[in-house]
Length: 151
Image (cartoon, rainbow, N blue to C red; front, side, top):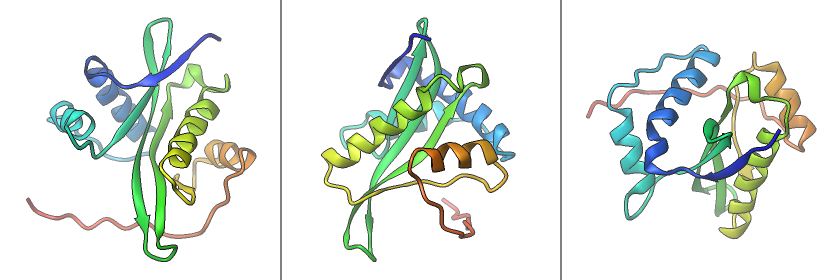
C-alpha cells in the first residue's frame, strides 16, 4: 500500500477531530468533538505549539495520526518524548504505517535530545500491546488517573 506520513496541516483538522472520535470509541472512552477543531488548531499551529501532529495519508485521504509532546522527567532529569496518540483506521492497519509513525516520533525525540519515548495503551488493547512489544517497547504496570480541573 502506498502512503505518506507528513505534518498535519490546518486543512486536516476536521479529519483529525473525526479520527480522535474514532480513537476514543476504539478505547471505550468518552469524546465530545465540540470545540476541538479550534483547540487543536491553537495547540498545533500557534507560535509556540503545545502539540506536534503527524498524519498518515493514503490516496489523498488522511487515515491516521500520531501526536506527541516533548516533556521532562523529574526522575531522569532529562527530556523525553511522549507519544500521546497513535491511531489508524481499521482498514489501514497491518501495512507498516503504524511502525513508520512510531519511528518518526522516535526520530523527533532523538532530534530533541530526549532520553526515551513513552506512551500508554489500555490493557485490553491486546493487538496494540503485541505491536508495541514487537517493536521494542516494554511495559510498566500503572494506573492512570484523571482529576478534572474547572476552568
